[in-house]
Each structure stands twice: as C-alpha cells, then as structure tokens.
Picture 1 (tube, chains in turn red, blue):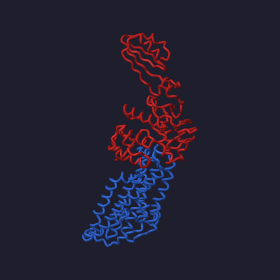
Picture 2: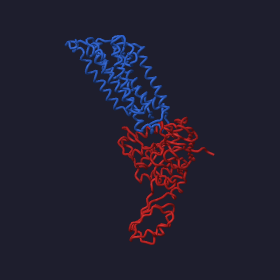
Picture 3: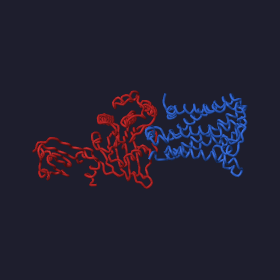
Length: 295
Length: 259
C-alpha cells in the first residue's frame, strides 16, 4: 500500500497567544482531488504553508509524499506544485522571463509546456508581471504550479480572480492532472468551486476541522435559497408543511425559502401554479456550517 | 542559459546598478579634478575647527586631506551605504510582497536564496566601488594630486567593504524580521551611530574606544590615503560581512516566513 500523499496528525500552530490551528488531522490519498474548505481566516493558508515548510508547526506530525517537509527540503519540493494564496508578484520581469526563471530552478519543465498553459489560460507572456491584474497574476501562479507536472499540487484559493470561463478551463487542468494520477489538494471558500472536481473535502473553521465529507453528499445536503415567482399570488399554507423547507416567506406572487436535500416536494407543490421564474443560489459556507453543524 | 537566483538578481537589479554607477562616477568627477585649481587659488586655506573634525574632515590643504574630506569622510561612504542598504533589502521586500513564496515553492533552499543574494550583492558592490575608485584615480591624476595610487585604492577598498558590511547587516535584519522597513531603518541607525562613534570618538583619548566599535573605523580609521594599506583593519571588514551572512542564514532557516 502506498503512503498517503498528505498526512497531518495533531497539527497545531500558535502565533504567540493567537491560536491559528488546533489539533488538525487529515489524510489525502494519492491520486485524489481533495477540497479544503473554509471561510477566509479559518486557517487554510496556514495549514498549506506548513505543508510547504514556509512556516513551522507548534505541534503535530506532517508527512507530504511520505516525507516531513521540514527535512524534505528542495528534493521534496521538486515533486510539489504550489500556488500561493493571494498571490502577489512584483518586478519588471515579463511573465515569460519569470516562468522561465522558475522553470530553470527545476530543470524538469518540458519545452513548450509554459506556452501551452499560457494559451489555455489566455495569458499574454510578454506582459510585465508587476503591472498585471490580479487575475493575470493568478494565471502566472497556476502555470508555475502545473508546468512541471508534479506528483502533488497544493493550490491555495486557485480560482480567485479568474472569470467563470477561465475557472472552467482551470478545473479542466485539475481533471487532467487527476487523470494523470497526480494528487490535488485545493482550498476554497466556495463549495461550488470544489464540488465539480473534488472527491472528498474537509471543512475548516476557526482553526478547527469540522469533518471530512464526501463532496457529493455535501452538495446534496447543503441548503440552497430558492426564490420562485408565480404568475398569480399563492398561499403560504400550501407550502408550509413541506419536508426539508425552512425560512418560508411568501409575499404576493413571490416565494422565498431555504431547502435542504431534495427539492422534489417543493417543485411538485409549486407546479400546481404557473411559475414565471426560479432562482436558486448556493449559500456561503457559513450557512452550510450552520446547517450541517448547528452553529 | 540556466538562470539562478544569483544571475536573476543581477538581471532584475541592473537598472538600479547602472544608475548608482553613474552617480558614483559623477560625484568624484565633480570634486577631485578641481583640487589643483582650488589649491592654487588658495581656496583650501581654511581653518578646520571642531565641526569639521566632528564630520571627519580634518584638513583640506593637502592632497590627502582634500581627497579624504571630499570623498572618504562623508560623500563616498554615504552614497555607497545607501546603495548597499537598499540593495541588501531585496529578500525582505520580496518576503513582504509575497513573491518569496513563489520562489521557495521551487526546489531551492532558503540558504541558497540568501547566499546567492549575498553573492549578487557582493558583485554589485564591487562594481559600483570599482567605478567610484576609477573615477577617483582619474580625478586625482587630472587634478595633479601627488598621491600613490595604492593608497587611494586602499581607501576605496576599505569604503567598498564597509558598504558590503552594511548591505550584509541589512540582509540580516531582513532575514530576522522579514520587513523591508525594519531592515533599512535599523541598518541606517547603525550606520549613523557608527559614523559618529568613529568621528567623535577620535576627538578625545577618553572616548577612543568608541571608534573600535564602529565599522567606519576599519575602513578609513588608519588614514589609508596617507598610510596606505592596513591589512589588519581590512581583515575585520572582510570577516564582518561573512559573520553577518552566517547569522542571517541560521535565523532565516528557523523562522516562519511572511506571517
């Protein structure tokens, strides 16, 4: 049996009196796409930067690809592609120069690979990185993480700053990596970003892990707010008793509610009337926490 | 060609290096060649006095005194130190901006980053010091200063090593704190304190010991323009940046980065 790609046991991190992480336990299997969910400030970046040995844990054991990052050093990082969160790049370099320089530190990047990725992500390599928009800087970071086809990709909020089309292209890259047998560990504060690609996910809040979830389950169980607009006014009583329905509010022709699980009952009840429009939005992670963990 | 941290640093800072080289060529050219005409006009027959001594400018009337007062007491070290301190803050400013995360995501160690940055700083300091020295030698010859070239070189090398030491100190404070402002600020404070300790300390035998604490003393404390090379003092300025680098590496390897 192969070792887990990432194994974290009892990981804690304090900055002086401030507690950033408490007793984190986590296992990511090789070849898995693993989502690391949590609102901003939950400790996701702290955990990730410990995996990369940029910061050191206060307590706990960490293994990345079977090695402690503290001792694995440069040899371990050869096998990792890392996209920093809130990526900032300064300098007068063009993207081509910067990525070429980063590739030279590895010496294992296939020719044309940088061009291919830039084309896919629609990035102009001749532009100066210091003057780039946040989204373009993010693309540079994504290329730097993917260019050497690493065994493990550690991506901190990879889609932030990307427009929806490019988010889709990026998710394509993640799927391609997964098909290749590469392991992907990616953080996000939005469930929908992870649900399309990840097999499993953990949810984190205030430095603590709330549980490992099957992403499909999570998606099914997570609440959604639904707004239905009917052709004529409807009666609240018709919907009041439906299972899996909360926060019901009817105002004339408009019905607003929160659903959990299947929406079948709601739509069957609604179908008795003429429906003009449906709006269903994914709640933020806070709402999912509230619903899943009761706080 | 495969780019390393070393070559990349030189490349990224080449514009700054060119600018500083121009400045360090121009400044000696403004003062040094005029020595002969000033001396003939009698413009240098001035009473020195305490304030000049406090600034390390004892006497203008000899060639050595004129060169020392115009170039090696304040102007030369000031420019070279500002250069070395700003360039020495490179890694700290990248840590602050987040760019360092991207570099350290590659298979390079922290030691390698800092050591190659130091190597680049050494080369850059050698270049601007070389330009400064060449300008002084040319100026001294144009101004008919009757000074041995070896003595001028001793003063130039001492001042260049002094700058490198302060660049290394800046890098060390950056390696300790991760903040560009602290790196530059603390080094500047040490430089100002060292400057006054050297000059004021030399005015009174009771405070003579103060001079030995100041890096400035080891650069020009033995009046190299008059006395030539003092290898004992130069050795201190060779060891100081090395020791500072060793300290930088050990702290930088232990610390949480960019928190």
